[in-house]
Image (tube, rainbow, N blue to C red; front, side, top):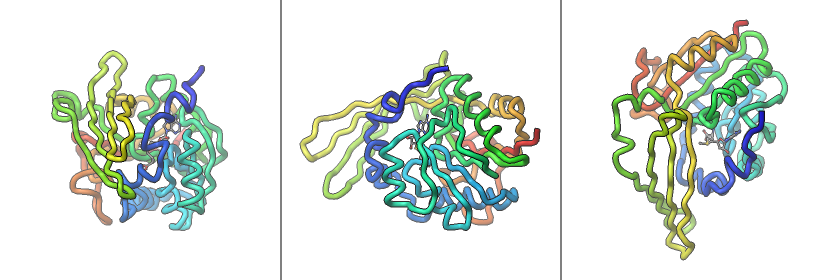
Amino acid sequence: MTYASERETTRGNLLIDSPELYEARFPDHQRLAGRWAEDVLRRYGAGPRVLDIGCGTGRDAAYLHGAGRTVAGSDLSTAMLEYARAHHPGPEYRHADLRGFDLGTFDAVVCLDSALLYCHTDDELDGFLGSCRAGLAPGGLLVAEMRNGAFFLGRTELLDAPTVNTFSHHGTCYRSTTTLYLDRAAQLLRRTRVWTADDGSPPVEQRSAWRLLFPQELRHRLTAHGFTVLGLYDRPGPRTEPPWREGDDAATTVDADRLHLVARLTR
Ligand SMILES: C[S@@+](CC[C@H](N)C(=O)[O-])C[C@H]1O[C@@H](n2cnc3c(N)ncnc32)[C@H](O)[C@@H]1O
């Protein structure tokens, strides 16, 4: 099986090439994502060895390290890994493709903010789940947080019009215009994003896509790879509105735009 290289999948993405901008655009000052992940790991009694796959800037991996875990962070983007080593030290950061990896043995794999949805095809998804299975100790946990494909069934509110976002960083104002559309045959949510900045640089257009994964489909695939699903719910989580708070219990619904998954390797 051949996969797209780093250049094709993560380079040429302004935020992934510029991790500092990524954190400026998606700040998480309260470390909500790391705290949520640690809370889930504790609730389900995970052991200390954790792999954060698709770790990005490393801030969640570093939070888990600070909570006393032995953490490896891994990403396909060398820019992200360099930034993580410099700005969020503690974890061991390693280059790997989440669609097929061998990074040792862990008690838990966490995969946050839709990184899992970079598995676009069924083969890639099998590559990810097979690697998790091989890399998890018996009873190990898979914890993931992502967009919910089912949200788009009958809803067009995120598709009807482009979304415009602005933020400032070191005196430059950045503006992104994002258009989402469904590629139904490929089960992908495709994204076109145009960046402009008031520093005189020319506009940049970038394309990306997430797999549209549906709850039943995810359960089925997890079961086929030896996992038992312990939790699959839409809220609360680090990117829901209102956001997750310590002590919150998981909903029983899987309807809103985020999907939270907890699964245990049972065979
Ligand atoms: C939306 S960011 C999320 C980063 C981090 N998990 C977080 O929550 O802040 C997605 C990350 O997945 C990484 N990524 C994309 N495709 C990947 C792949 N095939 N293997 C490993 N990482 C990948 C990107 O480089 C990026 O850092």
